[in-house]
Image 1 (cartoon, one colour):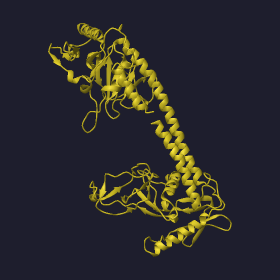
Image 2 (spheres, one colour):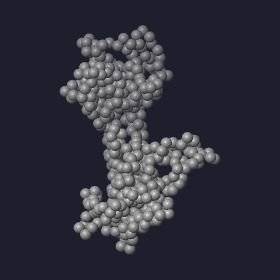
Image 3 (cartoon, helix red, strand yellow):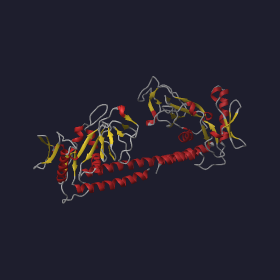
Image 4 (spheres, one colour):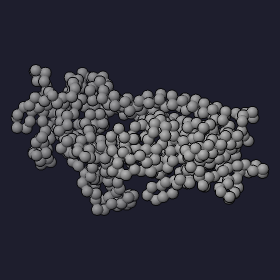
Length: 502
């Protein structure tokens, strides 16, 4: 279920008068607007409002030709049919926001007297734009707004609306609307959430008071405003519950995926077959293949190559050059008898990225794609980059696993084509007998291990040695195939569930 689309559709029906039944006994909205105008004019006479406060108030009506017209304070009339976005029920009316509001203004600078938490003298909340905690900035001792108001985030998190019923202080990037008492605050919020809030501006999108005040409002009768607000509130509560349940399901799916991979790397996902050729034989085959590649000059011998083997005491040892040490205590868990631990460099060719000269980076797709740092996802395969390079440095060949080695460390993907990789990426091409999909899942399972080995202050990163010496468990070749089939089966089911939630 697409709850976002459902929410928007409901709000759209609400402001078009199609959400709740019309009641012919309701007082028309035009009468309500007449009362508001009369009340405002009386407040001007009593000095509670200034004449300029209502100078922009207008009367919008439909004439005998069935077109909408707007009458201004100076008596002039203008046809505004092209401004009316849609038809509303007969007992509804269109009006400008300013005509049904007492005040519309933007928040100012933050008060000098501000406390992060409330105390005996600082009880008035300060609000700015933002969704988190409804934009709460802090507390002060004197309020700026003492009447119920609707606030709208005008910049950054544009369009987030909130009804404020207690005294508060608005600061920059927050617009305050204080409507007439006859207007339902909840209905006005529905209108804003559905129709009025737009990202407007140049380099930084924003809303302003001059943009908001002349906006057209579809106004239903007073009682219908309440019925709409009541209906929408109840449905939104249900949608919120559905969203929370979807989030819970997504969390369960995420945990399930992690658990499947965890079981896989421990040899607990599929049954062991004692007749399978042990992983030690597979690794010996890979070692011989690697030696052939070295002789052919296709790869270079690593002078610090790590050789992992199991001793007569059944403990694991690592040999680098002439140095041998026991690594049994460094291994995170026990493996089945026919599995083996090995370093990542034992089963794959690893290329650490190196960024080309910035002058050679371009947007011309006739050159080689360039990816650096962040990996662009498209169902486990990188999507096309919008950057290309005229200078060929480090190339990831097709069917390589890409690994982010600096923030965000541990993100992985596959490339189905040759690309140039920058210093934020490593390209890992498994040797024969190890599939790239197998390696993809294995590295995904060891992401937390890679992150734990990252260092740095501004940007965390992992070194070449960390990547090459990452210890991973290798099952027999036949079991690799069974494991991959089982992982794909489970992940496909999870994907179906996720798709059904959207």
